[in-house]
Image (cartoon, rainbow, N blue to C red):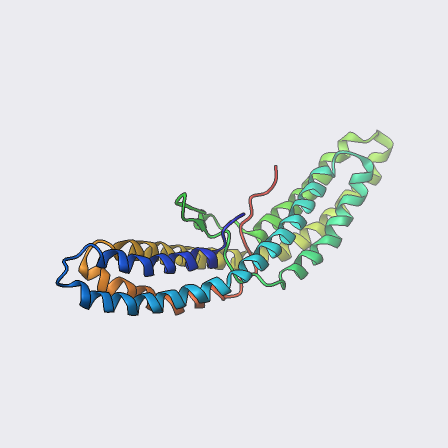
Length: 253
């Protein structure tokens, strides 16, 4: 099962609490009593934050469901686009299906997506290319405009006496599709905005992972890294709960 952002953060803060005690066990006996009290305080606060993120993991599941619905719609639209020039039936009906499904996808944008499961894979150190601007609005814009192009690819395939009629249908359909594609193109900046927040969140989570690891290595990090993690908590929550109307999906081949 995929790990959502809240589950990752919950484990990170719990490990940070454990690392505080790990460091206390490595220092001299003279300093242990004083630092043990500090470790207990940090552990209580960090464990409480971990508990909050643990409770919020239900939002990871909601995000998985939302992403699954949106991805299903997008893959369906992609398949309809690719089938347009395969047969006369597809040529006639696939563009109509695309026009009808487009508002359904728009309606899916109002489904909650509080987590950011497409953000990164910390374990494998993978990050999506946020500069590319890939997102659902750009993807659907590409699908719709490709569908308009595929209409004209089908025209040469029909017999000569049907070509004028099919060409007229292709022109009418393409105009409608281009209008719908343009509407989605207008929303492409939302993809860029989402990618910007994705990069910010990636940087913050990576920074948090560095801080949680440093706790074990020296007294300065032991004293100050937990404070940094505690201060990061409201910042992470704020960015996580920014509405996300778009996302990156790897489309099925």
